[in-house]
Image (cartoon, rainbow, N blue to C red; front, side):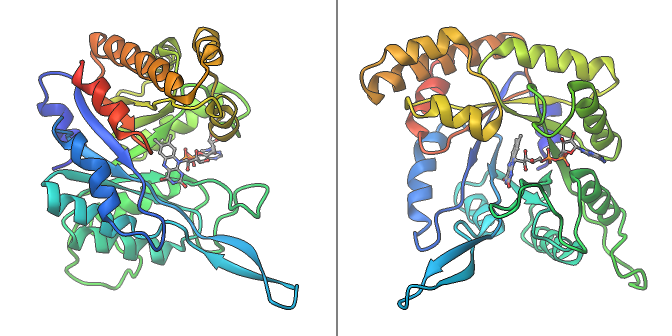
Length: 316
Ligand SMILES: Cc1cc2nc3c(=O)[nH]c(=O)nc-3n(C[C@H](O)[C@H](O)[C@H](O)COP(=O)(O)OP(=O)(O)OC[C@H]3O[C@@H](n4cnc5c(N)ncnc54)[C@H](O)[C@@H]3O)c2cc1C
């Protein structure tokens, strides 16, 4: 079922989770172990992230270096199918522009269609680790909005080869990313919001936000979106904090702030176990407030800490 239909049918706030494919070489069992305790809370859908290939330099025996391409977490589409099959839950694969030609994107969408997956989160992706700025493939999409057009075309039965006859229409429900604290490359919030509106006007059915730790930022973002005519559901993305290290890693990686009250509490902790407690309380406080304010879905980035998320959801 489509994410948008889950939201339309719901009587209250829904729950959803986001997971990463396993590291290459690891089995899928660890992922099931991660998801098992969460399934009790009946998520409406589960997102699976996409991880592009990276260039790395490997040292040869003679001391010289060799440039090789590695993909640390392959398998997004098949992980989605496996989760759907095991838990009978809808899945949302993330699909990125980076590293994909338009033909490869079409093939990926066709695969998803065959697997019975009718949701996709359309993203641009970040710059590859060896690039200073995002560069699309020569025949790939530059922005998420470009890929949205391709998905919308497929939903109308329009494939890249325009001489195909009697084509089947896909039925993808399209999600996109939104940034309550602005996308880091956007010159200002107004510009970023206008591009977000272009994604929605282009066919996105809903928005999932980047993580935030201050609900006021989410409310202000939703208000600004509504003011410029973005009417689709805006799903808050929430992440548990469990280590002091995250105080610097999260802002650096995701270009977000942690509120002073929260960071002060974390700084007082003597162990990461204490940080977990503070992080769990904060996540619970955020979740309860968002639920009280009628958000459509609470979307949890469960990454590495399923029990923290399970404890929070259990108390809602
Ligand atoms: C919920 C969520 C899930 C994510 N999952 C993944 C994942 O699985 N894998 C992964 O690699 N990354 C993921 N990301 C990260 C995401 O790929 C990056 O944040 C990326 O830098 C931007 O992606 P986007 O889809 O928001 O890009 P876009 O919407 O294309 O925007 C990128 C930048 O360009 C600007 N812009 C947009 N359209 C135009 C235009 N037409 N002309 C000029 N400027 C424009 C925007 O303002 C923004 O600054 C996720 C992010 C979120 C919030």
